Length: 115
Length: 116
Image (tube, rainbow over all chains, first blue to last red; front, side):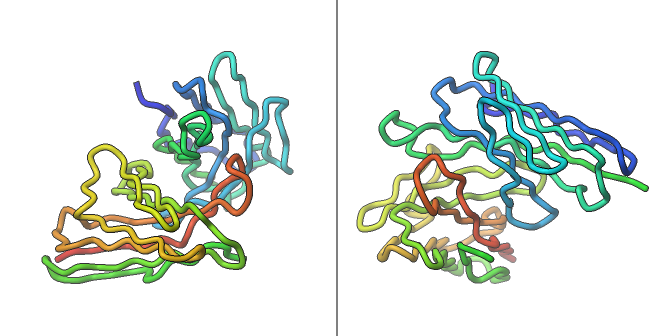
């Protein structure tokens, strides 16, 4: 089983639609969780951190369920510029917990927003 | 603005050449930096952790003699791909933490390496 699993997509949605991405992780010692966005042939850019209480940033809402080891990202009112690959990223843990602050990336979910 | 700078952004060279890639933290000190590699349509894979003033730690399956890492200062880590071959062609990206270890990492722009 992969450490971080995502549906690769692509998700093709019309502009204005709401779309949700899911991610599961296998390492229960994981401490921190993030969603990154990666455009074609570019470096990943942080979209948002994910907190247990759930957090929202404009049109983006992230949720974390530690018991189920599940992370989600919801995008409302999607725009053409949201087209990208969304990476679910999990921190393996700190040096104290043996994780070395290393990140594990999912393969990404591709989103295509169309007119 | 960018907090991690990576150079060069693109390298094309002949097989057998060694290629050095630089990763700099801008306006902050990074005792630890990370080097990743990404092949087309695949996820980023951590290659090694670069530790300032000590040896890098490599992930399983990554040859330390092939991918030399030097972290001589708190703002600079270098990755040298020695005697590169076509199978080393990939997108190499570095990252660093600006704050506490649970804070998100910032990534450099990446280096696209093509070995002919």
